[in-house]
Amino acid sequence: KAGVTQTPRYLIKTRGQQVTLSCSPISGHRSVSWYQQTPGQGLQFLFEYFSETQRNKGNFPGRFSGRQFSNSRSEMNVSTLELGDSALYLCASSAMLDSPLHFGNGTRLTVT
Amino acid sequence: DAKTTQPTSMDCAEGRAANLPCNHSTISGNEYVYWYRQIHSQGPQYIIHGLKNNETNEMASLIITEDRKSSTLILPHATLRDTAVYYCIVRAINQAGTALIFGKGTTLSVSS
Image (cartoon, rainbow over all chains, first blue to last red; front, side, top):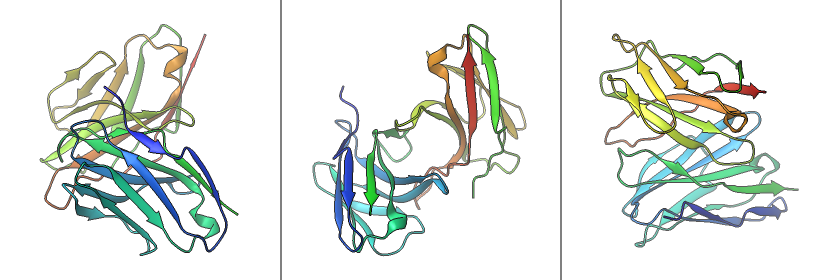
């Protein structure tokens, strides 16, 4: 069974631009979560979706948003990029809300 | 904030058992203990989880104390490929969501 797929793998953007990251969960998984990883703050929870509904949101500004489609695929968007948004963005999926999360290898975003 | 305490780093000789401790003294009755590991530049990998009974799978064993205030992850025969950051996480499953709150983890170095 294919794992969680995230695209693109690497991305370079300029301050003020916006970016969209994509995540395809493991087949049959209905929950998708997003995490940000930086050297300073470590792994931090962004948001969680289940059946197209946002179930939980971390402590991030409104510039960070996401959505989940009917096929469980998910996208996250960051508007008005700042230098501090440079990070590894990880997507994880799970079969149900109480199942283990399985992570993709992330999208590394660099903001210049 | 993370609800677990782990040593910053540990060393292990190849072929020996690696025993990684974790303290979670404030764990609640409905919270599970999860273990993940992250190898450089990859997403976190799910290892094992448990509620109160000891658990074993093909990767590792999880020993949870009777009072559930601490646990130990055991890699029975460590290899060089087990060198990674290991995260112990306490996870509650509730209507508000199922986010993983990562701490700094334990960096395990396996050497030959």
